[in-house]
Amino acid sequence: MPPLVWLVTGCSSGFGEAFVHSIIARGDKVIATGRNAADRLGHLQATGAAILPLDVTAPKQDIEATVQKAILIHGTIDVLVNNAGYCELGFLEDIPPDKWMAQLNTNFFGCVNITQALLPHFRSKKSGTIVFMSSIWTWTSGPGIGPYGVSKHALASPSSSHSLIAVSLLWPAYDIADATQGYAGTLQAEVSQFNIHPILFDIGHFRSSITSPTSVSFTPPSASTADDYNSLFTSLTAAAAQLHGNQPGDPRKCTELILDVVRGEGLAKGLERPARIPVGKDAVQVVKDACQSMLETVGDWERVVSGTDF
Ligand SMILES: NC(=O)c1ccc[n+]([C@@H]2O[C@H](COP(=O)([O-])OP(=O)(O)OC[C@H]3O[C@@H](n4cnc5c(N)ncnc54)[C@H](OP(=O)(O)O)[C@@H]3O)[C@@H](O)[C@H]2O)c1
Image (tube, rainbow, N blue to C red; front, top):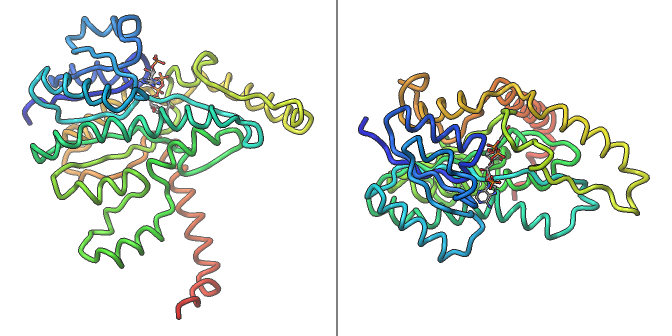
């Protein structure tokens, strides 16, 4: 395969930084982007990566201008990695609207905005791959995970049945066996005809800055909820602190695997490229458990809930 040109968001640390090293090591080219690029991305200069400032929440025209600049660097872009993100936590009764909006603006609309800015380029050359860094929190849930989980659910949720039914009724020619859901699923349904392929990774727990106390935003219980939520808040913040630095996943192994999948080589050689796939032993287990649980529910209830047609 000839060298690919990658555009990666959020490269100052974690997966973004690991992507830069994996891409260069594979002989591909990378445009590493991030906020406060002068301060936060300087350490990547020596890798040979091109560096551009890009806040994924910037106004549409600024994002479009940066994407145009990025295309000019190597004359093309082949792969977009929608990676930038952070973790907004808290109890639903307390989280203020501005924190919800900030989380969705970065983790969801950030992906929407960058993807929208790159699609004309991919469509004009009839090829492109769009990687989404999603999470096992789309397959499971827990107290406190609300805004982060919702931001990843918007990219793709696991409940496929009604979208599949809608697709099969409205567009029988569409290959529903390949369907993923949410934003990434709709994107796949719309742009695979142009040889543009979104791939969503449901990633388990990997060691990065995302769980560091300086990165996580956890809204504490308010005066009116504290009596009922404080003990849960204390145990969740302790669990988050304990998790940080002890996650089982190695970000570099994850980015190497994603390169294998995108390039169809290494561990992914000979396998059909998926539209959606979990990464990490923990993620595989969560996905299996969620599917098993839904199959059991449907099995128990099928007779009761299937008699509603005219
Ligand atoms: N680590 C995991 O276990 C895990 C699991 C599932 C999914 N993910 C996803 O993987 C992605 C990367 O996270 P990570 O684990 O590598 O965490 P990380 O080390 O904290 O990296 C997050 C990156 O996103 C950047 N970022 C945040 N807001 C941004 C914005 N508005 N514009 C541009 N860049 C922005 C950060 O830049 P600054 O330095 O400027 O803050 C940083 O470079 C995220 O989408 C996350 O949800 C991670």
